[in-house]
Amino acid sequence: MPDGRPSKIRPGQERYVARLEDTPLHDVGALDTTAPPESQWKEAWKQLRKNPLFWVSAVLLVFLAVVIAVPGLFTSNDPSFCQPGKSLAVSSPGHPLGFDRQGCDVYSRVIYGARASVAVGVFTTLIVALLGLVTGAVAGFYGGFLDALISRIGDIFYAIPLLLAAIVLLSALNNVWPNRGFWGSVLAIVLALGLFGWPQVTRIARGAVIETKQQEFVDAARALGATPRRNLLRHVVPNSLAPVIVTATVSLGVFIVAEATLSFLGLGLPTSIVSWGNDIAASQNQVRAGQRLGTMFWPAGALALTVFSFILLGDAVRDALDPKAKKR
Amino acid sequence: MWWYVGKRLLQAIPVILGATLLIYAMVFLRPGDPIVALFGDKPVPEGTYQALREQYNFDKPFLVQWLLFLKGAVTLDFGTAFSGQPVIDLVQRAFPVTIKLAFMALVIEAVLGVAAGFYAGMRRGKLFDSTMLVVSLLVIAVPIFVFGFVLQLLVGIKLGALPALVSSQATFRELLLPAIVLGLVSFAYVLRLTRTSVIENLTADHVRTARAKGLPDGQVNRRHVLRNSLIPVVTFLGADLGGLMAGAVVTEGIFNVPGVGNLAFQAVRRGETPTIVSVVTIMVLVYVLTSLVVDLLYAWLDPRIRYA
Image: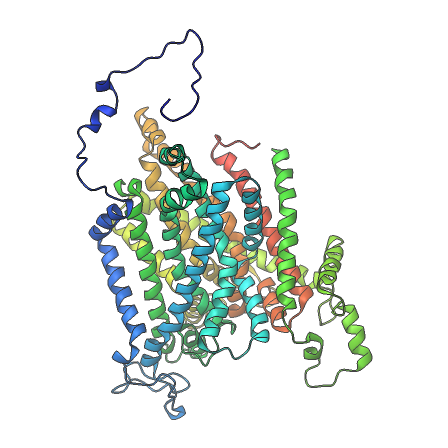
């Protein structure tokens, strides 16, 4: 038997052997075997290039990356230079968006605020995706006790609402580890959101791995003598990545919103750090009073545009990676 | 089916134990002494201090504190808040308000989300569909408290159409605006889910069969497209009830709703362990029960699913 399994032909049973022309093997000759093999990723990139929404989000995100890398290119004002005399002043030359309550330049704060907000989103997503992928792959591939253990632990973290868990953990961290600087503050939020965010990715990765490991090419690799470890790393995981990447891209936006929400509750980044979340939170009194709505509109708008871009990107990637969805 | 329900409830026990332990551990991380904080600038009398420490079990090791909490929780004794009131009383007062708020939000998001998503999916690529997609993306992209403030200002204060703040009575009319704000993000998710699901089902074999046997369009759309499209939506809504209760921390703060979200947030600020752990335990219970109900609903929506 070609697949190495013992045959189970009962006595008296005849085997029908189809002629070559009647089998799918017949078409094999029609394939251009000299052409280089197209990987799933190359195929997806071809699809992605054709999608206008991908280009919209890509242009926005590249622009965002430039803003984060060299904010000085867009503004010469110092975001932390505030003049109390200019509190809530309207726009003036060099200060296109006016001033906030503290008398800081709104425009430069929007530009500089990108760094902290996006850092939280990117690093939380990396941690969640990595942790989720590893646990999900192990649970899905090995099954049995490991699967039960990982799934139950995941359930525990998943059952506590993300926002509430982050609030409790951050309020504890604020006491244990005060004055932690820019990266320390970012790390604290990344930890709080990451610690309770991974089970969602685990579930998705686990499902994808279980689906992939039942496919023929995995059997083929095993028949050729691949060890389970090699099979998992070289065949199963690469072919289960698509849904994880899509979820990660979309949740990047969600984590940026979560940072803003935590800052609004006073548990996010310390107010000394320029971030969109802090500026939106600081503007709530003006909005309550109905004056200078721009102080909330501009940081909120920048945040919304960023999240929007990531969700669009996630949608485009999903359409490219899921050939079934394309046809619809 | 009862066998299945029993199995699921048994599986929930380690989840609840683990979740309370986790929250206990996080609250325990706080090095500050909540009893000293309770007295503010005033000196704490030594005798009172010891008595309070014993009352709140702060003098015992961490694991013992947790076990004592569990022991009490089994008999519905969740300990006392720093104000001297039993936590169960506080929760009993706040919980119905949040449940009411969350259910109002759930109904709003489910009805509007499914209706808009169904309509958008049936007319894919048309103006309504594109508008709804942009609207849903915007709703997801803008932090919820921004909507809260804007709607509070516009609808509550400028137009005066609905109350901008909620009193201790928490009437239906007062809770309407917070419920809309609370349900807004999930509305976007429900819309997107329903739309995708409807588009998927429109080309499914069973819908083609239904049309081929001459069933009127209305019946095909209702019974075969909509009903089958609801399965992922129901999963989402079930999981969302817990999310809504957590989201209530923000919404209840903006609209001054006397619910568990507010209660939990205040308790976190004070480091009031019994209240925090009780509220989280209740939320975990809600999550466990709703996910069980969702799984049972599957069987009703899709009779092919059986439980073992």
